[in-house]
Image 1 (tube, rainbow, N blue to C red):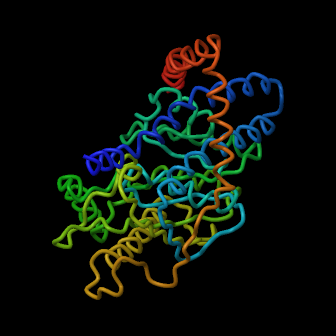
Image 2: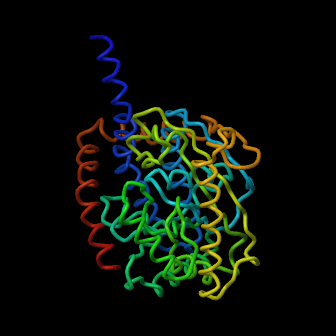
Length: 365
């Protein structure tokens, strides 16, 4: 019976993170909304500076759970950036944890508040978060021909005009790689073959439009592009076949796998500007990713499997970077819930904040 209790508690490991992350969302939105109103008549750079700081606090709390709480081991390879830069972050996409990995790198450069995402359009309907991500600089894009290129350029230009630091995260595959979705893989490989491009095994054929628009819009503002390749150790079955990468809930509930992250820092002068040439360049970058992942998952030499080539650095995140944010947001939320007025405000923020947010993004769509 004791063993059953322990196993049950172990399976509920994700309940605490979920409760805290979701539970503090109204508190965070209230704080952000108050600053949004106070800064209405200030230059946008002042609003952005404080918004980035608020975002850093929330995301630091997120990383407390995804790094300190889970005890995951992070291994870094390649070009290990240390200083803040204005960058486009291009990565393979295989899990809902991928956006956390962008945070994992950004916090090690003291750039966590500057992270902004190119997101699939459906995420804008998330309660509270959907509207806020847009306000923080996130860009929602559709996978179809309805991609709003002008809106993306306009938004990026507005942030550049305000001198806003940019750590723009793009997943060029457009959807997550899942080895179990054979139809998706077959369609991606067939498209590559049709275009005369090498067929890829461990990544999908990348799409060029968002990357091209971002780079063309910001080429004079950027310092570099980070080409990031991520592999989760322990995601191979008994037959040596790659399995689906862990979801957020699985990552928090189970023994977290080691995460291997390979970074190539590419100077902007080495990136072709014309779309037709950039398309070929981007595919070549994904060919490099594919070779890295083939080595990681499929190498015939056991000594070379479950690692990327070259020396790795084990990077552990200090509690000093994350625990204060957890205490601040949890304390403010607890204080809010201790009074009847606070509880009413909390509930109304969830309800009306979500409704207003959905209305806002539908108008802006």
